[in-house]
Length: 402
Image (cartoon, rainbow, N blue to C red; front, side):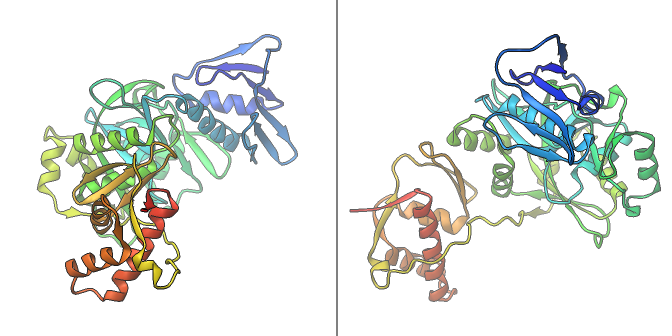
């Protein structure tokens, strides 16, 4: 069976895999499919059954193997959404979910096992509309950045833990859609899900931190630099240049405040979000009234220290021409238009980067940081500078000066 999908120019060829197509139809909203008669010229994206389950094959791409029709449909959805966004320079794409609460779209950036999809489902069971479950494209054309609904039903891991509560588990059972014993899609009424392509104004980002030991649900304000670092990590897939991505993330965090929700109980978390964002109070005013916090994100990768003896401290280095730097709240975000890549520096790294506007030796950098942080052991400062300089050189952000 050959099928045309509006998200990609490639036709989809289902070989003994009709149940994958049926699952795809059941869990998407606003996706356009047309069954084709006969063959087509050129290559196709193939979904075929094999002894282990199903294979998804596309010329020039890694073949995906999935054990069930549900998991194959899940992977195929990711592939098709990626094909939709990968050549669009006007889009950003975040690994995130989003729900409209009181008409305002709240984005939940992905954090490992923090309950993004579960919380989104809990909000849907409380009559809030799901904009996206796992992949959130953002339309950056025009004056404002808007969320684009993915048109994909929420998906939960099963079996559902008893800790989620009887009410949630009953609602998830009543709304059960395709299920393979590992993932369950939810079948929601049309009033609670947005079709693919629907645009939504953003209101806030809410990062999630779930802990069984957390008593009560607590909402805190996240500083802009932390939010930028996290969103840069969550960004993927589009044709936008690195410097454009940094600029757009800067706009996003300027226009939409970020929060951290610490919670243990799912119902309490949903109620806190309803109280906080369902009212008429602007999100920026709410942000200003809350306790501040920073997200615990590592800003510099671990590298081996430089090992060239006494010559290390005399080596002269400087910024590589053409690197774009965006500073915010003491942090710095570097974009490399030539080689690609975006890099985040904390306050110390940002200070070092500014000192490197003119050629400077590693020894001079170490002395300058030693004076600024006189309470820190000189050996630790030297080791930190070594690692930072090594990272900058390895990623072609800095060069040795003649």
